[in-house]
Length: 383
Image 1 (cartoon, rainbow, N blue to C red):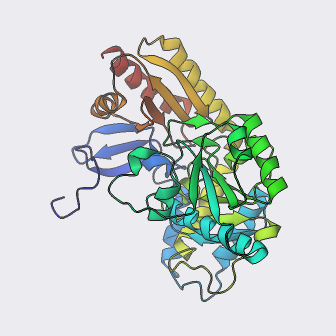
Image 2: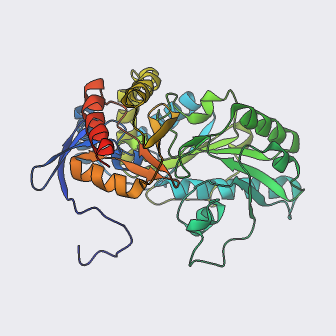
């Protein structure tokens, strides 16, 4: 690792193989995976149907660019529009790139219709939208706003769950971008009333309502997309992480109002929608279709198991589906707890300032949860 830049706080573990909800390192030690590569491995590790799909495609054709059509891209775009009940898709590679596309979409829509000066994109405090400069600017957490100024103009942060703050905004606004569950911010769902009122305000003022579904998409919350819990119709959503089950894939989906806003030359991505990622996404969707309805119950199973532990250093569990945040209270620090969990053989994540985050594969079973939670209980009781 001496030639890789030191930009990550890596654990001293090197994984060599994985199956389902388990990973093995180079010493043969087994781990239960409640992290899914930060929400990416939605169908677990080395799922046979997923492997078969990408191996078959690799033997035929891997990349042609978006100068040409592909059958997997056409099939996948139709599938995504069907499950999102929207109209058109742009394919990208990552969550940050997908959100960057939303920023361009919003500004062009507004400029085409209203002219210059109506370009500000509102995001929420405690949000996270990516690491590129514009996505970082959109992120509503000061801890990420270090070292990289000056930041991009045309973004403002408003308090989450305070509808009055949105009503107070002026005529320079073109869009609102929200996460319905703030993942990196601590796994905090937005209130139903707030989201519905925000959607109504966006419709009244012709602000685009854009939902960052990078972490909440691909069935993570118990619906294909998190916004579907709120009975709203956004104008555009971004997606990435778990949608292709392990390959770098993202994009955004738009409604009829926006399907023709970006024309040839307005936006592009060399690798976006390549054949390998498209077949991986199609296989992922096929695997997930019969189990999406089970995700909410799986999340409830974990919650009940943790509640029954009566751990004094756990304040509760919040989130949706299999996107869960375990609140750590008392003197324990989530980073230290997470370190001990890894050493004990359970992979989790942290979020916000007080949370151990669970993002297990959606295909995980109760047996997987029992095994992982036994480790969790033992570590937490030993603090």
